Length: 69
Image (cartoon, rainbow, N blue to C red; front, side, top):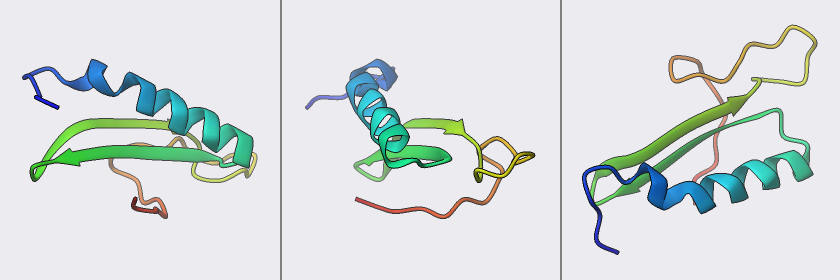
């Protein structure tokens, strides 16, 4: 795939898939990074850090356990 300067829309299907999968699996939140050729080409955050009542939103400056694929 040839990447253009604004590639965020190219990964909308990936974002949708990850968000729907997280919801089905009962995940409280997700941080999504796609790295291509040593460059972050898309970055998204949604949900909470846990399922606790007062859990904080998932954001770039907050710690989150992660899985890499």
